[in-house]
Length: 435
Image (cartoon, rainbow, N blue to C red; front, side, top):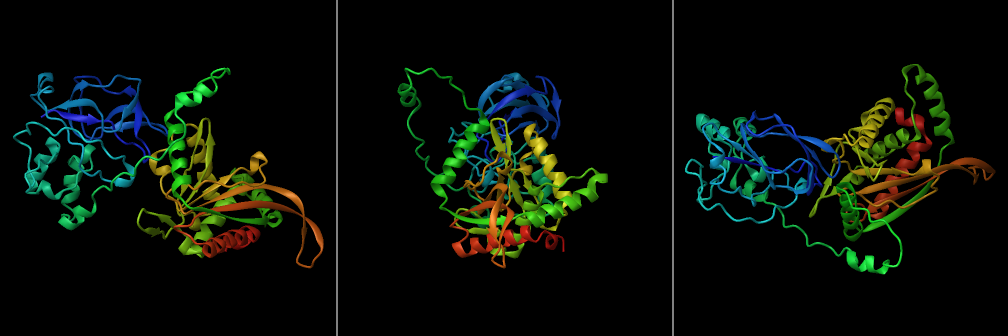
């Protein structure tokens, strides 16, 4: 039976993409894992791998096509003995089964059910057809596995070879577990402001250039609108004395010069936040719709500005890693972000984020939380200011203003204050961070 290849969701926020380049031609044989195409997502250009084996019967979407919706058929694979004539008679792929990760894939639009299921396709006990690749069906038959008990990870929940092989090493899911995995209903779209024509009419007598939104800018607009409309932000501010950290950093960099390592203030901030999440574990949490997930490791995201938008790559287990390790990885992530070469796992996850505009001379600002994070630290510039020391004497110190934006659903005021106090203590006592 011909198999439709669907436009994949290659990032958690992807709803549509551009089919930049085909890496196969009609008539080519492909195996599971072979590269099929290059696809521009809302974040980067990524290679798309085949999940089924077969012969490329037809390429349905031309190279360079923009705005291809996720789960739209883009090609058709044929089995041995099939020809292009079989494509017109193939039933449509289903669109309603729950995806493997409801949080990372957009909800599919309802589509017409197939008129005539293929005779060889297995059926569940309720009579519904089970969609599985030909190779997956053969392996399941050889191993005596019931496909109705296997959850598919392919497009539209299609069962592929990897799913069947994985099922041989673990018990089949119960009916209750299957029901619990059902996709939650998507929330109603929120108002987005005046219509395009309304705004354009307001400036009809003024000269302007109209700039189309690319995938990244559309995603930023949607996610930050969602964040400000749905997350109850509150803000906590502290001034941090940096002189001891700057002296300590200078000594370390002198010792690390032969290794080609130069630590930035931002590296210390990452480490300070990661340790603070361990010191205040209740704040190491994210919002998960109807519950809170309290994380064990300290995974910290850092905003990286690029042309036309930004990324928030995540440094995992940052609390247990050296400053040198964090510095090297942060430079690598930032370089790949600017080249739009990050993979989804590079910018997915984290409990809190850091947004540092100090290098642009910004004294202080309020950052918008990136859901599902519980908080984000906005970092301003370190500047010389008059301060009163512990003995009541007037002195000059390097002061950095920070603002912690907090999701009140996850972190209450006192808990947020405790987290910010831990961050401040870590940065003002940098040697203790290495203990």
